Image (tube, rainbow over all chains, first blue to last red; front, side, top):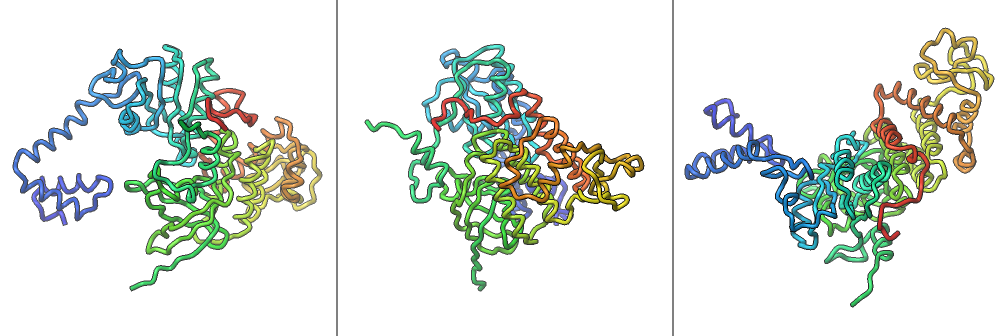
Length: 203
Length: 269
């Protein structure tokens, strides 16, 4: 289909079509929208895309994506540098920041252990975490990996790797239980059992 | 207009991967339909009613709607969550191993009810057994048997004579034991000690209720692991991811091999 189109349009359609969730039809619709849109809209998008590859770095301490190294969170002296929260993805940092409950630092693993998919500890930033704790010990390490089998396996692995290296921080896991707006009738046994065990006093 | 075809099944979740905004594609192993793929919509949302029920390695009752490509998961209710597997990294790793083996050795829509029940019983054993490696070896020997790769442990695969327990070797290429007289002609065969040989036969002929009482010495445990790994590698023509993962665990510290009830940090249970 793209063969009869001018080169730049065909190229744009090809590139857009590589994005997740976008098929050839959507790609050409988007391309023609950009073609007709006011001139600055297309160039603003082009600038944003260029900035993505040129203006982004990984923070050498927490491995979050950032504009500068160290990132704004690691460089913030007002935050609690004695607590590190370990998460799977940069988006999890944003989710935790939105709560405004947490004032410590982060460590982004960029994934979770999944032996079936061939993702082992060496593919994650776990060695870097162990080294970071050796460099600068903390009081508490919060393991905030997803409450799934992969996330649990990752948390258990990290706990053992840190203990094996002689680290002695308090290591905690995010509480688990019923979601807000949930329905007990539909809860699975594992979640409900943990919710009962982790119940808390009212008032 | 097509009527929606719904069907009910028991299933064990072998693997899953994420698609779209909040969906997952599950690989399920069922008794009557064998292995199948189904899409579970919205299960990555924290408020999903299905998500906890379709965690990996859960034995679950599902209601599926037949779709053009993928069947769609419409309801799910846990039958047995195998909690012991989830609370211990070594047990988790062995569960990954048996799931990966099932996934690699079976094809879609080729039902084998005995394999399903073997898988379920093995997951149950892995969540409680003192020695999960024994349950994994039992599973390997039995599943290979069900699928037509039963290791020949009673007669020599080269000359056909009945073998004595001592001095044999195991040939992954020929799928069985080679007697001491034939062993020199089979370079690929790995030596098989008497103890490992007897345990292997025991795994093949006795039920789990008997097998679980076997206490393996570390040397025999290691020999059986290497032997089954070589045999599985020969059949699949590749190594399983879970094997190298287990090796990686051992490198991090000797404490990994014995399953423990140690849980992560401050969790309440």
